[in-house]
Amino acid sequence: MTAATPTPTSAKPILEVLAQFAQKAIKFVFKIIAAAVLAAIILVIVLPIVFFAWRAGQPMEAPQFNSLTFYQYITWRVETHNEEAAHYHATHPNVNANPSTCYLGDSTFVIFAPMSEFYTLAGKFPTLRRFISPRDYQYIPTGVTWATLPSAWWTTYETAISTTIHKDTHADQTYCQLPQYPPTPEQLTPQKP
Image 1 (spheres, helix red, strand yellow):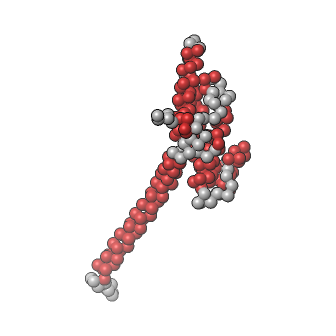
Image 2: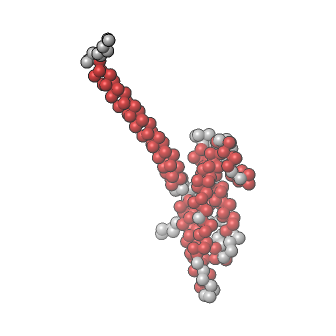
Image 3: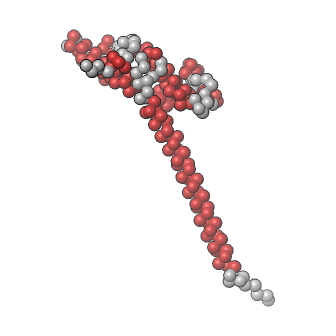
């Protein structure tokens, strides 16, 4: 019988060292990939929110907004709804004029943000149109590039919320009806003597 040839004792530690090194390298690579994926997910979620918050502080371009910022426009809507409801209640004391019923239309502004972002992406990637109702194709911008994506998104958002504005004049409650055009920024800001 022949005995198995023993492996040199120096070769065994080298193989173990190489295996441990390979294991650590693989773990390191997976940690890097996981960190990159997590960073990408955070950026995909955070960047649109940051852009939207920044852009909402800039004057809106559609003429029906009279160059108000989105924040000014929403503040004007809420204040006007409250004033109109108070005035209506003063002239109709038997009617409970609740301005919160007027805010239901404003809640669509929140829904329009991600929806208009998706519509804008459909302008960049036409295959996404299959997930959009044909009646909403009018909101999909054309010629969208990566460079124009943020501004196209905001323009799409303004277009989408402007449809809600036109419905204000047809609101069920009289006190929910708003003027067709908001005041200008100068009219909103009290003039200092």
